[in-house]
Image (tube, rainbow, N blue to C red; front, side, top):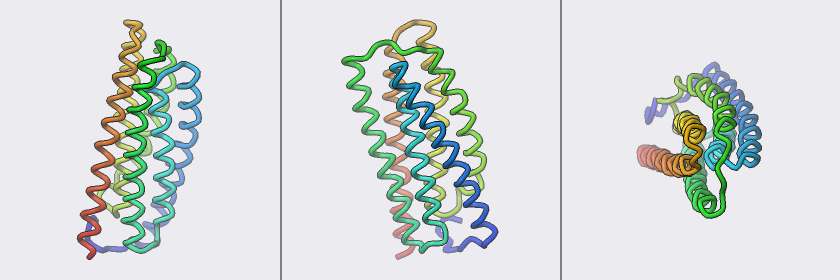
Length: 202
């Protein structure tokens, strides 16, 4: 529980590790699939979602490293996760601006095709992490990360549908920008949570 100072049991620790390893593997696979597809079809939204998958995989690795460590280490792990997510959000906004100037209309069907399995993966991971959403700070950060991914996946699917129907690439850019802003908001939530946790342990 947040701020209770409780340490997980050995059984709980093993359960956390299993969930995080599975989440790490799934997100790493989807990162490769989405970034490759995003580059091939020229979709900012798919590329943004793929990079978000990479950041998620990194956060799960950080959370794994924090299991069994001191409260300070876990707080630092959550802070690092927040900084990583914030950097990703800013980078996504920069990519939207760049593609606005030089990009072409992406393939809407491909956007939906690659985002549907990504959504399925993130829903599975979100359910697996649901029991950790009120747990230790580094695990709460992982849960927030995954929640952001689910929102991003849905947005990309809707963007792909809009591109298919209208042929207008600006839907892709708008969704890419929206994902970037949402990612920044979630990053600030993680950093706020980490600061509160740090204050409660001092």
